[in-house]
Length: 242
Image (tube, rainbow, N blue to C red):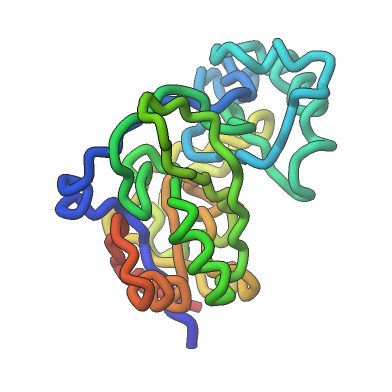
């Protein structure tokens, strides 16, 4: 039976490396301003597709500045991106695309960026995981500018949003999603439980489908990381209920 783990930064290991970066995704959907259905101005955080390239989209400049927009404008921009995104992507307000762009310096741990809900991985660690047969391992080039003469090769993993929380960890009075924008007014439960029937059987790495800041790996991923001696991630097992 597959076991699932919440992936978090290993702060002890993080303090032993000098790697640091200040970067943001190249493009993104705007947030929604004053949704006509629920009245809320909002955007998501964590829904990120670094492999989705908008550089050939004539309207790409409209995706460069983070901002809230009226729902009809958000919906127009979402439809422009939809053909480029993975099939079935929800593309919530604030979803980002393309490589991380910015400055970086120092010696990076094998895994980093988890504190920002991104997963950056050194090339040597990525190649090791690929050789171990980890499923769903999509490495994307970053546009991090290093000051040192021989910068490390840092990839970002694209993690598909999959799986759902189990109803037992949700508030009994949780309101249904907004029929217009799909927003659910939900805070992440302290005691997260995964819904077994919703979990993917073909991936070892993914984001939680209804809370994109939660990064999840299987026991196969955990074993490959530990066997390779790769550091930067801490693992917390999550309960699963049918």
